[in-house]
Length: 355
Image (cartoon, rainbow, N blue to C red; front, side, top):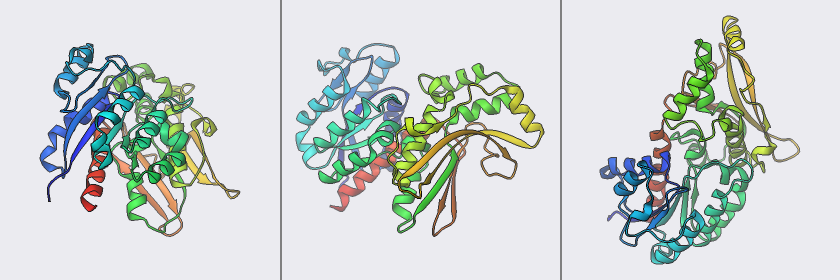
């Protein structure tokens, strides 16, 4: 069977967006689809759109040098993601009609309203484009509305990279656990905080650990989103909304960060056989809906979350039929996040091949 060609329009071209492009090229011979980068929108470096495809390698070089995509001959006048999405829907109308246009949304997290990412997703779906995102905002603020919209236009809204990078958590539940009801979850979901706490255990400085996470492209652009617990709260809201049928936003998640945590406290707990972790959790509310929280906890050595080191993450689900199911990610890098997006693109390709 001939491999379908997907037309990808990238909204956001930071660390994650650029790694998606290089990863697609790296594993092209393993994929069951081909692709064309139809457009790129950036926050600070202009945008580009071309029916025949944007030169992604040159675009990456320009952004890496701090230059504008206006230097590409294909650059349109539109400056923001929403405008580029609208133009892309017109330019690639045939591809949207036959289900081959995909908007890949990797803009920065906004914990106040989930914007502009939520608007980007909505506009794309209304134009009958599929959407893949690694942004937690749309799932944390508008999951149910966006899922209904996607279903109404026979398109998909996929977000595997929003919580645990490349680990197929949402697909695990959706695809392999039919008729199973998730009752609650708990996990360590913020890589930066786990790394910082580990560095403090070893006598290191918080600022140095944060700087390393930023240099590796793992910490949020504003590290306060990690350290104050907002990133974990957004992930907890997303998990509660998808797995527990919740209707939460990050602001409704009980939140505690690690900014007040000292190295002395961390090391005292370690000497007493406990390890400090920033734990995200959620549970179904007997009255309906769900609740979620992010807390600093001193865990006993026997707790499976206590053994997580460095950039390791884990989620444990409590279910009605399978008991407790756990999934652990030993390595958290840009490649894992980019892979989640590539994996979601492969699901869209599979959908096209089954039509």
